[in-house]
Length: 269
Ligand SMILES: [Fe+2]
Ligand SMILES: [Fe+2]
Image 1 (cartoon, helix red, strand yellow):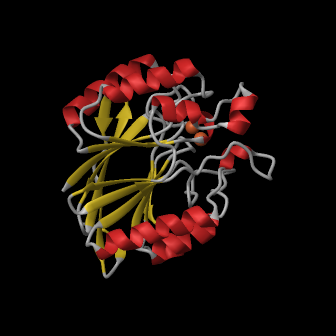
Image 2: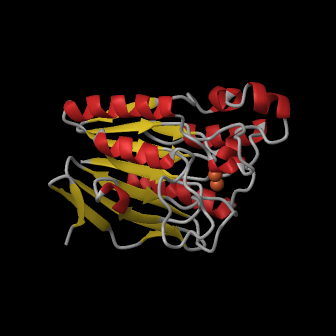
Image 3: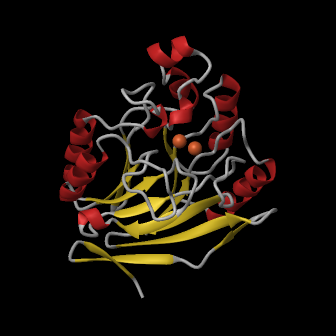
């Protein structure tokens, strides 16, 4: 079994200080094998915000896999945003391109879905190019053939849950979902909407589990308290403990558990 802490939307620059302190304690107690951060590590992509995020992540025990979010391309330095959008991210946090971490029977692939700009009015929605989707799918297929359960981490949702009115899926999301499902991706870990949810994705016939994290420590809340997830992942099962910030600590909800039966995720009773 692999224990994964799933954090998202830290938004350093808009941090809830008590939640930040409580998160560090909760993660120390949880001792995850891997910490996955699904984007928006900073509020505006400022150097100071990245330095704070890097300091927090480097103090954690164990490996970290982080992917950028739309807030991580510098907002106020437009030259940097358009000509080198991920240079600050890569200097402070790590690679912004495709990443892979293997832990026993589990492989986590990280992909950047954020864009410096897009041919639509709202650039915050993100986009996955067909080239990147094909690259991820090729990698996922190889990992599945090697007998591993493949989880994918990206900032933008591939599906929108029932409580996220007004949200949009990432550009090329339908193509990506179809390709990832056919390539053996078993779960997608996402953020961006600052609301938590877990469910099998109907559009894939239940073959992919969507794990949506809320904001872990930011004051940018959307009607839901700060939270993070602790996943226990095995070859054919995933269970999620959602930890919610109660004012001075994170306390867990009852676990939500799912089992793969003939390639389809079903709630485990
Ligand atoms: Fe965010
Ligand atoms: Fe975002």
